[in-house]
Length: 78
Image (tube, rainbow, N blue to C red):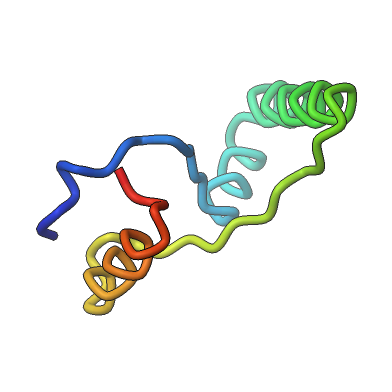
């Protein structure tokens, strides 16, 4: 996918199916991960921030370039 070198890696995304597999194969790691998420949420609350919800697309989708152009138009790219 072109233009990805301009993308700042600002977020980490983990597919829920992968977390389900982690739970089945490494339950302690999964619990630790969940505790980490709870900690991040608690800190955000203390800072007066909400838990965010995000829209996510795979970079190899045929429409990814169109989404990049939309993000650029709204100064949310790079």
